[in-house]
Image (cartoon, rainbow, N blue to C red; front, top):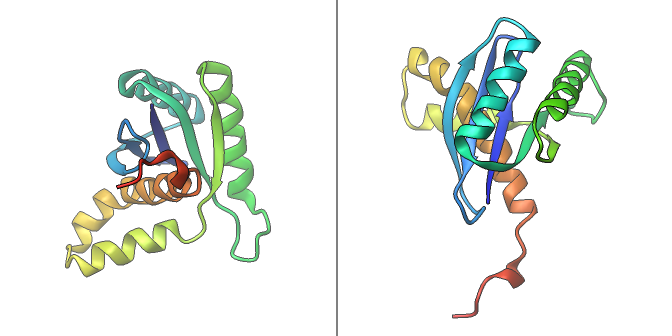
Length: 144
């Protein structure tokens, strides 16, 4: 059961996918989009291609937990996506996901140009990994 992770932006959308066991998130790609309609269509295609059984979209709350303008845009996107895909679509608090991804890329000594190209999919990976970690149950694993 794969889960598709999304870092939604008005111009770029980062995608990540989980392994089949739902334990590890892997950066997938960055979509460049022009409209919400295009975003919904391209993400729904990614759902089919990846055979995802769930979608997790990062919800960009402010650091104090309040809701800004971008939260409304993400919720509008999620609402439209739910109309198009037959699987659960959830939101997940994405505070600090972009900063974590940026720090990881800086520590890898990646050039600014390359960081810019991969940041969105790395943020999607951080969002998805956070969701996977919160939804893993240690009781599901066999004892050694």
